[in-house]
Length: 204
Image (cartoon, rainbow, N blue to C red):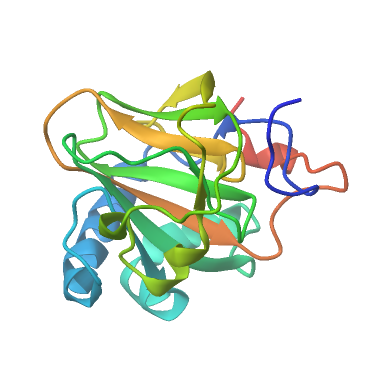
């Protein structure tokens, strides 16, 4: 049995997201603008870091993305956005996010040649390294015992995906550039009673 943080955590690792491919470049431009606007609010400099941005500012700065969420029936469920950066010389350990089960990940910059990787393992009562904690809310996350982890799957982080964030996972890069993706979180989460993603959210 693969480790899951809580009973509600889905059994699946990822699904490709049904975002409008023609609108994606403009959505990425909005997200880059938001990234620059909020950089000074971080608790630490961007290295391998997780930073949250409040809903109100996201809605104001990213109207095209919000239109796309409306098309998918997710506008009212959207709760917060996080920027996840990865620097090749700073490890981002396998971890669970704890507070939610899934996220919608959208590549922003330098995501080509990067992946999201999932693991089985045993949890350790320890949060992520200090350089990962760009916002106070990140302190609740918990890492895997590195002596116990075994890879169980991976997906291309240069393509928008729904990802399971309460199985052990981590971003992985294969280049030396700073990589940044956005991760949207929702409440209630768009999952049915069997913790399956709403079918229309998955790219066919």
